[in-house]
Image (cartoon, rainbow, N blue to C red; front, side, top):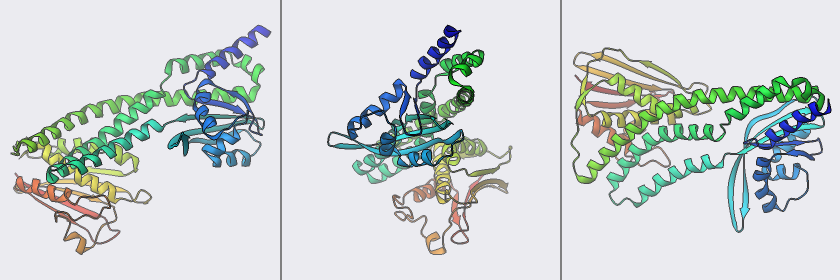
Length: 407
């Protein structure tokens, strides 16, 4: 019987010690009773930078996220979740340099004397997104040809927002992907549940099973998300290449439009796919009302995508993330010799004085804006013998962008 108990115990400790995220078990005083290899690696630079020794987790948490210590100490003696997937930012010194790190935490109380802490460093993804933003800004500052730089920023900015969101989502999922080990661990726990209960007690065995079930479910969901994101990503890459080709034409002085018969429904759907990450992040409800048999228009598809992406971006940014009503509707209608596209949002809106200046080159209501986006959109629409107008009933009443094309 002793060998049957010690064997699963040994396997459990081995698997947990080599898990891809940090895992620690502490008692109510903060004393560390278990810390896996990944956890030791994540905590080592924090120990060194803050000269923290000993076998207590609380001093480390006070440096990383003191609010977690309070939540643990304030929690009841009953078992249960204390917090799940909570993000915390902190600074750490490397010599004379201080850098920011971003950690995710999950804390589960198994018993008054057993608290499981899961944690991981997700700083790389944050820094990559920040680097993209800074790179675009640096290009704008260094670009000698102001008009070209502004167009590049708007084109690449609109496209890369969708592209980087999807690729970073995939990278985050892949970094935490350990499906084989999780599946083997789940199967092992299922067959050895009675033995685990004898070794760790029923409460710990139950907590471990529940944690594994949650992790396994998340893993399956992530795999499905990878499939969807990859498909969207391929489309976005193609559009980025098209936009870059347009910018190369600017640099060589060849700016003629490449007009071809274009399906507006397909074009709008592609723009929505590229804006999906920003829309999902803000939990905005989208409504599309687009007939299937719209007449084709003779247009430069990539340039029109630039316009619609800019209009969608403005609508998304106009909606307060904490607002109760977060809606964007796109309505397309075919009239006599015209196709009318309307994009309505529930954003903050504007007054008449602001509305009169929206298409003035250099005018902007954004702190980091260049005032060229809508001016360029107007030029593109007018080059297609169309019109663009933005209206609002006032602050807090949203805005409607109306674009008309001749058929």
